[in-house]
Image (tube, rainbow, N blue to C red; front, side, top):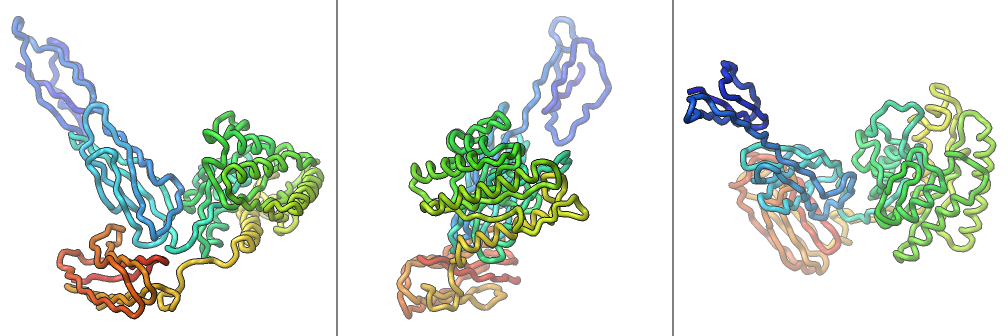
Length: 472
């Protein structure tokens, strides 16, 4: 009687009379040993062992490039399945640190980021045999608490996406003006979320969403806004009107380079579609409209300049009637040197290099500061404008944590303790605070591991955070 081996994850066929001394080779696969004898001829039977598929898993929420508030609980959700078995659990990770798991569908956990910054999220699904699969990563940004997040749609063509002639870079390296602009806005204290159906530049920053469609014309952008159909690529970019899927507070519009002509009519059609969306959604959008950058050479240089003059006149007429448009001069106001690198700011005849894109970012940023005004948010923790104050001591701490809450104004309050991976480890207080009220608490930390923790006091106006270190 001969022995036969089934290697899970492979298909093996052993025919009657087959002899082999080979040992099955496998890695991270279960092996089942089988023996069989034909009852009539004492020969081995034929066996076919079907392969066992690994589980499939997709992180469905948050969406790629999402920008979220540190003050809010973030729900991580995943779809997981296995054709030849069952899912035993799904684990969720933020920057490779496990933040929770769920063993029932729909698979989800609630997570709160302990600090602001960029995070890479993944989900890892296990099946009943122990096999596992990790989802594709989803990059998100978490902003400081207490500020209104302004949605900005960078809308345009390859200049917005950052795609050059004969480009060999991957999409993660195509950052356009958007990377520097995001840095400028963040450093100035603004909380923004770039939106759009495309995603490029993600090797530099997580909030890399945009509406840049390489090769698209201005008339095709107008159609895409109206119907969601991208005629340049022949695809349905969104199920319906584009702004229904990607609503924005501000649109950065740089369009007209492809098949440029002197008429501003197609750009006006874009503005008309934005107005239609505003009316139907009862929202207000500010359009920052660029007189587009020119090119290094060719007959289209003069045509581009004429186009820019005409869109400025068209936009000024609309502004006079109350349309919320801000005109920026990219052609002459950004300081472009229209020569190929290394002497100029152009990577090719049409597209800027990094220096040129940084100049574009400067122009956008100046306009955005005027539109956005002074950044708003929670004031300094010691300011009398806050509703409460929080003291936690000693720090570093060991076996016991002393906490003092002081009410400044009437407010509901909730105090929670989080570890450095954003997991809530304790609710320390939940109730109402009144002016002059002092609440003293003690918390036994015997069940906690050494490391960094965050005490978060949430009030009706925002949140105070204190960083703590536990040393055993």
